[in-house]
Length: 236
Ligand SMILES: *Cc1c(COP(=O)(O)O)cnc(C)c1O
Image (tube, rainbow, N blue to C red):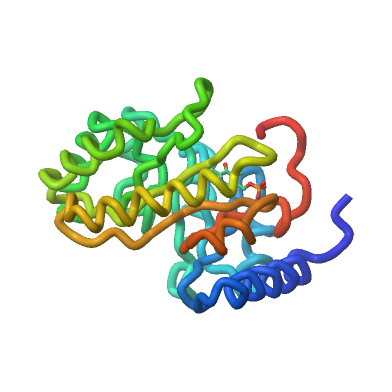
C-alpha cells in the first residue's frame, strides 16, 4: 500500500514545496509544513518527526488527546500540535493549553467559549478563522460575508490572538481561486486595520493542491496522504 517510507515522502514533498516557493519568489522559511495526522498512530508521527516535521494537525479531540499524552516527551524536541478540524463548544475545555494554533474557529459563540476558558487558565490562544470560501452547504467555516463581522468582534476577546485564516476548498478544480480569494480577504482586513494586529497566517493547501496554495501565499500547508500514504477508508 505505502511503499516508500514516511521520511522519503517528506523529502519529496519538501522539494516540491521549495520549488513552488522559489517559483513565486517566496522564502521557503516562511512556510510551515503541517502533517495532518488524523488516523495515524504515534509510531507514524514519531517517524515523521524524525523526518523533520514538527507541526501536527489533528481533527478530532478524542483522537488527539491520547496522542498528546503519549507524545508529551517529544514537546521538548519541538513537537507542536494544531487543531484543524471542527471544534464542538463542549470539547473546548479539553484542548486549552495543549495546542499552538486552532485553525477552525467558525463562530463567535465558539470563540467566546475558547476565550473564557483561556482567560480562566491565564493563557492566550492563537486562532484562525475557517472560511468557507466556496460557500458549500455541507462545509464548516464562516461564509465570506460573515468574516468581517467576526474579525471585528474578535478585537474584544483579549485571551484570543487572531493570526489569520484557514480554508478547505472543494475537492478538484477551483481550489486555486479559493486560495487567491482568501489571501485577498486577509490583505483587505489588514489594509482596513480591522483587527488589533496585522494578520499574517494563511492555512491553505492539502496533498492535492499545496503547490498552488504556496504560489497564492499559503504560510501553512496541511499535508496528510503525501506524507503518510492513503488513509484507511473508514474515518475520513
Ligand atoms: C485530512 C486533512 C488535511 C490533509 O488532507 P490530505 O489530502 O490527506 O493531504 C488537511 N486539512 C484538513 C482540515 C484535513 O482534515
